[in-house]
Image (cartoon, rainbow, N blue to C red):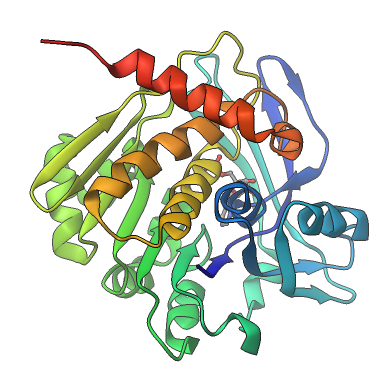
Length: 304
Ligand code: AMP
C-alpha cells in the first residue's frame, strides 16, 4: 500500500551525557521514511532541504527504500537546523536552537506519482504545511497519522487546531499531551484530544512505553528495557514510522492492528536510540527486528 511521509529533513547538533555531535542528518521525516520503509517496503517522501544537504545522504535514503522524488532542494538556502541537549535522565531534553531556514517558506508539492497514497504520516512540521498536504491529495488517505511538538503549540496554535481536526491519529509525547490539553492525567488528556478531532491518540512515554486510546479502549505497550541508550533523538519519529509502516503493510486501519503497529514502532525506536542520529537504522536486518518483536512478546505475556 502506498505510503506518503511529510516532515522535516534537517541537520541536528545533539548533546547527550555520552557525547556531542556537530551537524548530523536529522529531521522527523528522515527517521520516519526510513523506519516505515523497513515494514512497508517503500515510502514516498515530501520534504525540503537547502543545497548544504549532501547528495550522499539523499542516496542513503534511496538505498533504504525512500522515494525522494518529492524532496525539494533549494539553491542558496540552508536546511532546517535543530540543536538539543538531553538531561541526565535521557528522557527529557531542552531545545537549544531551532533555525527554520528552508522550512520557513516550505510549499509542499505532491508529485503526481504520490497521489494514490493510502497511508499518510504527517511528521513534525508547521501545522499549516501539514494541512496543505492533506488538502492537496485528491483522495483522502485511509489513515492519516500526525505528530507535532511543543514548538508548534507555542507559535502556531490556531493552525494546529485546524490540522488536528483533519487527522485520524495523533502521536505525541506525554509532556506535549499535557501542554496541549492542560490535563495531568493522560486518560483525560486523550479524551480532550479526541474532542479536537483524532479518533485515536498515541501518547509516547519515552523509556516507559506508549499508550493507545481509541474506540473507548486503551492499549499499553512497554518500551524494551535496554542496556544502552546512547541518543534518544528521532526515537519518537522512528516509532511513528514503524507504526504507519506496519499499518500500510497490513493495509489496515483497525484498532487491533494498531496495537501490533505500536509494538513494531517501539521495536524500531529501541534500535534508533542505540547510536547517534539515524546510524543504527541504516544497518538493520529483518531477523534482528523479528527477534526484538519476540522479546516484546516475552516481556509482556503472562498467565493469570
Ligand atoms: P524526536 O526525537 O523523535 O522528537 O525528533 C527529533 C527530530 O525532530 C530532530 O531530528 C529534529 O531535527 C526534528 N525537529 C526538532 N524540532 C522541530 C520542529 N520544530 N519542526 C520539525 N522538526 C523538528
